[in-house]
Length: 314
Image (cartoon, rainbow, N blue to C red):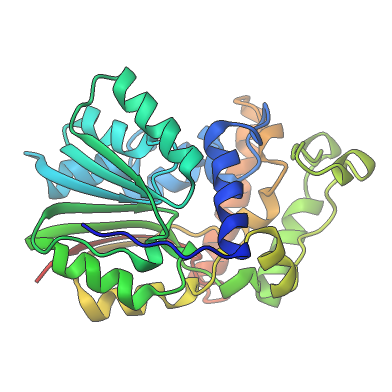
């Protein structure tokens, strides 16, 4: 396998952003993204994917599509390596190559793999937009919220296609919503309605990375940043996210797709989801929000921004 990386300012910013994330330098005591919340995963995400509140997407994929496990896997945007370590623990795949743009993330992943006595885990720092994979070398490719950070989707998917053996699995747990987070008016309307239905104790901004959160501690409405502002925050964020499902279907046979929402919930709960506790009162509030998003999706007012796609290589 050959991997190439171009050196330029946006890529350097992306490396630092994800290196800080992998090393825990930007992690607070509370979840700030909706998918970081165990409550959201149990009340919303897992039931929409597996039908079981306690069965997450990775274990469900293993049980349904690879019950005997496979030999050789690849993880896109591996970060600190948590995904492949859990995949190995589940018996999904024995050996992995993980790639991430951040050398700091790769160092964390390698150290944790060694600590866990996983000698068949290899890592390399590289810009995945330019990766070249060895033909017919893989049984499994995993991307957990990584593909939407890449701009050259056609090249990357073509590499997955030629690297996977016949019948090999491509599994994407991805954001496939609007490019650069350009939320629709309907998303902003429902998300703002959700926020304003919450008691003040559940609206406190828990994102300690933003000093403005100390000056404006309460969340009042969902916001849409300009594409330029999103790119300044993270140049790789949602570059071509909305095109992912169609481009994947052009290259692979899709054997399963779960659209699990988030078009309103992710916006409404951003920075405040850590306020919710595992109490009957808070669980009832979250269930009401989940049901509201369900209704809007069933009525065709909202699309799903988050999707699990399982493909087999032809």
